[in-house]
Amino acid sequence: MTASMSNGIRTFLMYAQDGKGMGHITRTTTIAKHLLAAHPNSVAYITTESPVIGEFTLPERCDYLKLPRRMSPTTMVETEAEHEAAIDHFRIHVRSRILREAALSLVPDLVLVDHEPLGRKGEFREGLYALKEKSPSTKFVFGLRDIMDGVTRIRAQWRDLGVYDALENVYDGIAVYGSRDMYDVAEAYAIPPSVRPKLHYCGYVVRDVECTNIDEIRERYHVPSKGPLVVATVGGGIDGYPVLEAAYTAVQHLQSVHPNLNAVFVTGPLMPLEQQEKLRARATATCRVLTRADNFQLMAAADAIVSMGGYNSVCEALSVGRPLVIVPRSTHKIEQQIRAETLAAHGLARWIHPKDLNGGEGLAQALEWALTRDPREHARLVRKIIPSFDGASNLTAYVSGWLSEEGMGGRADAREQLSTEGWA
Image 1: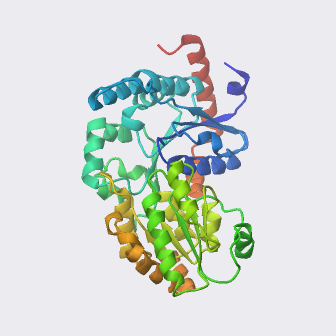
Image 2: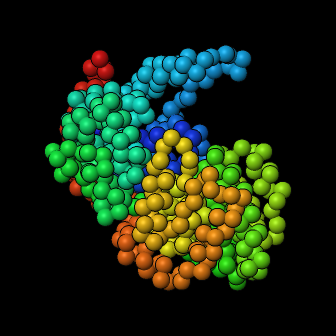
């Protein structure tokens, strides 16, 4: 048993599944910041596949365990079935073992799993169940982003993976990052009555914005202090080019009606370089294109926002009370479209299906709605419908009730036992 394991240090183990985007890791680092601030004698470890985790500024006393991706030479020829089988083999025999060893070595006081209750395609299942058996005093919390996907799809996935059993027998709590009035997860995902008492709606999780002085933000991004501003952001940007391309055309059209209109487009670090270059080549003094920016700050300075339908981007736009136009991702997953439809039904946003971008005409019409909204009235409507954007603080208060001194001794004993017995 190490010194840190015996001197009362609390350990948090967090899992953030992020293979392509940035949403899960952004939310997880925000929560880690709040947890560590509330518990000065604690440390946190984030396990993630995110390719950009090294670019995040982590809070003090927080580190990450990078889950590897299955690599193969460019010269290797595989069928799609062979490729998927190789990835599944890698997940089971490499990533699952890493997660299991990390959990059993750290014996954390708290395990917080974001989005996928058993990890991506069940890769954390073995580790979670093994830790539950070895360290009964460890608390397990599933962080549930309210809208995951179509309800039929999620229910089937949860049945196939054994998620309902884990919610019943592994998890002590389910922290819902949302509002029951906006989206009832118990009904949507057929959560059994025996599990529903574990549900705790925390409100929406957004980052802490460091600067809210609009003049300072506009000056930082070289935007005039007067005149309307459109901010268009596509998260990590991996599939956001069509949205920004249409937004550029829409802004050009609107500038004939609003001559003082400015725009800032943020491509995100994951947008392919050739697509970024195409957008930069079309940039003007009144329509800037950036690879990176503090999107939250820019949104605070905006009069209208264009965004894809990811949880973090939408929540940040709503939290600053700005009219929002959503272009949801168009894939087999319909999470973003459900979110867009839900917000539009409450009058908080307009949304356009990607196939209806029509070179920017439909987007221009939606932006005209956003630019002509009364900003104070819109902000009041947001606050009326969505009572809390303090999800990270509320989650911290929720789990802190379990992080009592009484439980520390049990985990220290478990750590000592594991260090002498091994993991067999």
